[in-house]
Length: 323
Image (cartoon, rainbow, N blue to C red):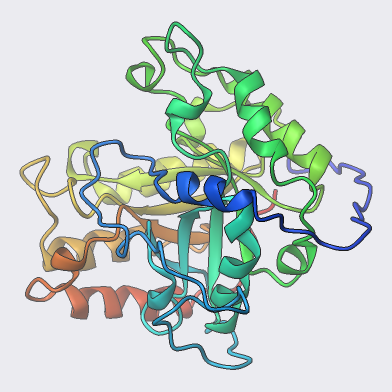
């Protein structure tokens, strides 16, 4: 999307009472199992799969803070982050959710002063064709399950960082040997905007993979790990590529598999040093790491490193991930 481009958007209004049929309970169970990494070792509790109370709004075991407000700066957190982790150290996160779970998740996250990138489509296996390639038709069908829900207040107040369209479309290994093109990503963003015009659209792909004339995609995603070379050069190149395409940029670290040597967990020193470098730019709109792991977050020095990055993120100027 060109920086000078202004897209006239209609304001979407959803009418009628909100109904959440009991039949969606089974769909909720299925969606809770979705994770972007099929090899993930995260347990259901760690992934934020929590039993809801009778009112359907507060996850059991979660201590909420009434009328909590966002800490400021840019959202900072992890993917697959449980709702109970929002609000203190982690102000943001990425979450895969189902339609029956969406409104309760959002209410709980907002009550803790959190911000969240939402994945609606779920695991890639849900939208592959018979040859294992990406199916836009199946992806749209997954998204359609959310179209009757009115979550516009959470878009307007910034609780929703953006709609996470797809994970690594550029990697052909994810899609039966055929990468998902940047033009297809744009079609996905267009479809999302047709349903929710004011919700930012986000894809987990580096900006240099994307088009120079996106009209509907708002933000790219740059995750640093050791094999990508000098971190200062990396963030400079990613910011330049995003700016040249008129896109916002989510940044982060692959904390679990991006250390030195490659494939190892990042040490506390690596987390703080590399994360600080990624936050040295004022351009990113969010800082989200891969991925929540209770054992890792209790490693020596990791909590202090995360706290240091959280302070840096909080001191950034607030901005939305909307091009």
